[in-house]
Length: 137
Image (cartoon, rainbow, N blue to C red; front, top):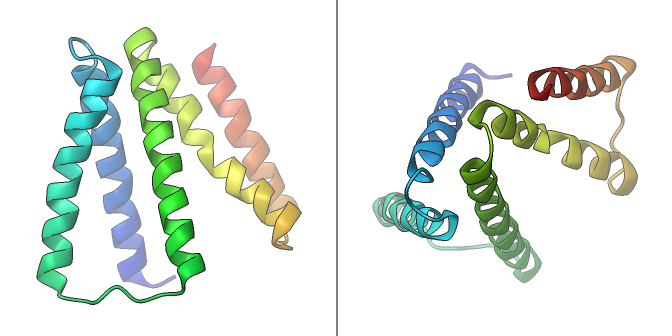
């Protein structure tokens, strides 16, 4: 894996962690929907600025654009669910459970995209689930 991709992945890790903490703080007095709305407006400002600065035309097939839209709908629904869970539960427990999202694409990849998982991959997925169960206990 290229060093640049690792650096970006670590940046995403730190920023997702900061997002989870900020979300938990926001839902102390804001409703989940209002907190999501404010965060998405801020996100649009950031992403919109990057898109404008990059000056790249949108290219891609209609199917891929449709999947990008579907991913946005899924992300919005997941974010509302996450914020609502934070408003009702423990930040550490809720964040740990949500962090298991990577299991879904792993299973979908095996079932629908002929992805192959090694024994180590399966063990890693199982240990991640066990870790979340222990954190949530």
